[in-house]
Length: 119
Length: 119
DNA sequence: CTAAGTGTATTATTTAAATAGTAAACTAAT
DNA sequence: ATTAGTTTACTATTTAAATAATACACTTAG
Image (cartoon, rainbow over all chains, first blue to last red; front, side, top):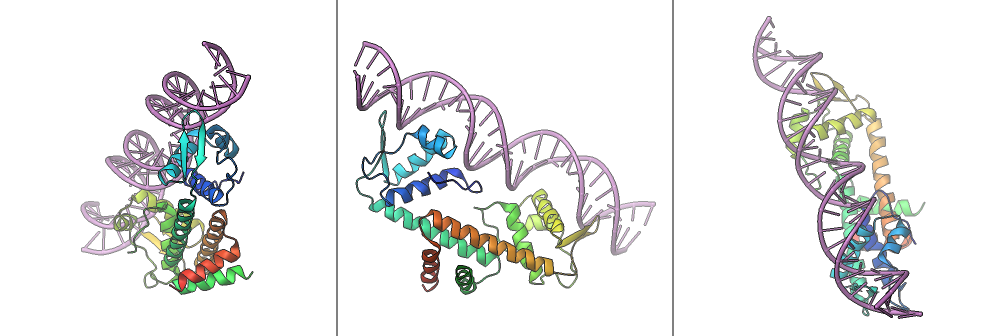
């Protein structure tokens, strides 16, 4: 189970991790997730927080729950792919905005990234 | 006066904005900043928060204060340049880490940025 | 000296996120 | 039916960031 970044809000991070896992077919066989308590324990996090994240993914059409039974990945994972792409776009937008506020134009930011990668 | 991003903590943002302004020589003439209350009003933010940000910049050697008089930019702005560069590096590190958690390798992230910039 | 404008300090309050603890309702296996 | 494991719901508490409201100390201009 991947670790959470302590410097960012927990709930959205869980949404992101699960979204990636769904796209990668991690839960393909049974399409059933570990129990809420189990997930929470794995991340060292409160069950309520996991519950909230799962509710969000349900609203987005990635999961559905069966009370008393568990959480299941939806048959069609195309929504998961869409949501993941939206997340990536959101992050890249934020990144360019932050760098702009730090005095780098989009072009300069792009150059900065290239240089950074080649080291 | 540049606007703050409501989705990020205020205090560090103020540090960033002021740091950029210092590097850009915005306060060169008198090297004196607007009053704490005035800055706070300009950003629609609490004076205490501005005070804390200024204290941070003082610790970092970018500013110094004269009680009863005001806040002044230090003669030598090389520290400001260093701090700004550190901020940019911190942001690019965070960005690559977040994209990695969203399933993109550094190489893929670099490609993603290039494509994004060329649109 | 005085008054207005500064930085500084303190305490209390708000707000949002996450935690803690508990209970209820449902499912599935035995 | 019983039992264990599950989702769901609720209320209270903690924590960190920011706000609110004052008060105080100092500088500067008049």
